[in-house]
Length: 419
Ligand code: CMX
Image (tube, rainbow, N blue to C red; front, side, top):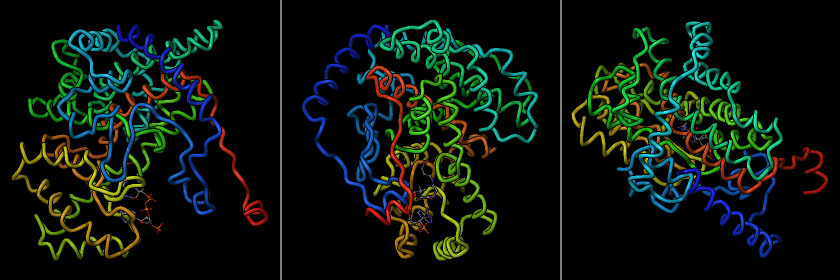
């Protein structure tokens, strides 16, 4: 059903893009300065992304819906929305849920590979290794080898994508139980939705934790096309590498502390605050603690952003959840105090362009409360969700025939001569 809806929409999107390029192909949409060329290409408009947009003052907008208007929808609904541009009706939702259920079993070779890894492997390394290993089952690769036409690439990218997303919760839960000695893997419960089932397979039995997983896996799904993980995944995919290799590449970028790994760094920081002050500190103490960290040349994790210039709505959504469910918790109240203290400190320091919290500032305190205390696991949760955005972007790029990525680099010598 999803496949049928997309087939119809994609032919319209292809026509639309063809006519945009025909009419406006020579119109300039960005200039590039020397500082931008040395500065991580920040702000250069050089690629398109249909699934979501991030505005500096409002944050994430998914297919036209501001994030805070749709925090009630499930991850499966957001996956459908990312792919098609519309929210699913009951029948379409049941269809995508069925497809995820039918494809959820993890191949046994994945467990053997994970078991062979060093016991202290980072959970993100385990996750991307598991994903890469499933390349062997890629339908895109086998259809490509058979010589399918270019116009069909997106279909097999989608089939791989659904199979991958379906297995990610089982793989991630298995990694959690294996890596942190939680006992045997827990079998899936098919009466549950995708995120509820994930909570169940982790072995955390609280119904509110299931709700948190629904929110968590929805909120992290996508953040337009130019962030490290999306851009890396798309760049690798543009070489027609399989969705397995492309998503693994993107997630390896997510595993960096300036990107998705900031959620583990952030909770670590909050726990450092708690341990240092033996509880919640006063505002003055917290301010000094932040200054000491900045003076040591370290960043305040969970704050700042390359695009946003406002509190991240994903942070707001997590804080709302926390206020509703764990209002009096010590760690959650430190997160609240940091929200009061860090922005003025960063503003006073005058370096960070955005002093406000990002997605990673609050989520860890919620996970910790429900017993998911192993913070070097947190980026795995981010990954499961973000894979939906990566797959959706990949399907659309392949449908639109976006060619291999190849921006032009120049040498400093060239800049000296030409700029
Ligand atoms: N604490 C201290 N310094 C910060 C800072 C923070 N939270 N955020 C930015 N700065 C500093 C930068 O390190 C940079 O310093 P230098 O000039 O010495 O290099 C300066 O302020 C300017 O940086 P910027 O233009 O404001 O930010 P960037 O676009 O370069 O980087 C980001 C954005 C997110 C990497 C940065 O804000 C940061 O390191 N934040 C902390 C880590 C974090 O929370 N990352 C998660 C982001 C969300 C996600 O992707 O998951």
